[in-house]
Image 1: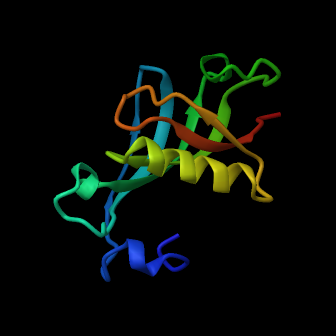
Image 2: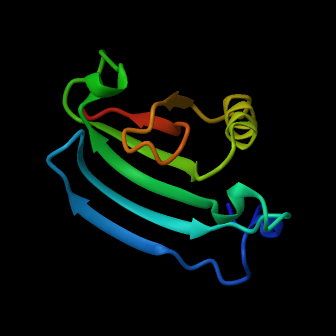
Length: 121
């Protein structure tokens, strides 16, 4: 993502990568948070971060009722972004060739999560 949009990320795109088990709504996840560059540093979204993760979740928590077992979702969201930022990302993603869906962010750090679902058989 940073290679496709170098104007939106610092030159050194290092982020805090974490993996953990969680007894909440996420069974386990691996994620990274990457700082984003904004045009107006005085903007409230100046501390935006791209969050990329792989999550294993209960499919019913994400209104996926046709999955037997855990749902593995490759996810991304913009933390601390504006509604306009979020809507633009959703529109581009939904109009892409990817099988992308949108769900709520359980941690309320973003307006929502975009994910590609993968079933466990």
